[in-house]
Image 1 (tube, rainbow, N blue to C red):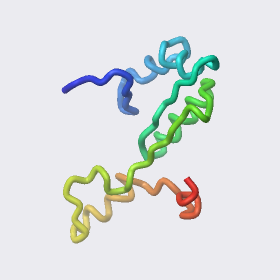
Image 2: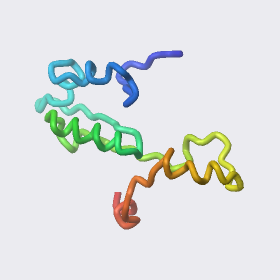
Image 3: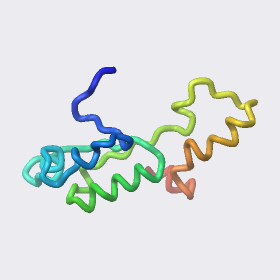
Length: 106
């Protein structure tokens, strides 16, 4: 497995260490003299909780880019005929929007 600098996972047990208010990453994201962007990729409640944490830590909203994947993006063999898969999809990939009108405006 190859490690990529600057890429974090919500499942990383050291995430709080990386996002510590005095850490280099948070200092870069909250530095008002320079613009640093942060891309948050996901469609679950954890994604939005992370964004809220970044905002609460002083990251400017304009510095956060939200990338919402399609519901079936990470399913290798998507099969409409598999009833178990169909039942699990809303749990694996919940709807990111409660209102379809909001999704079209983003």
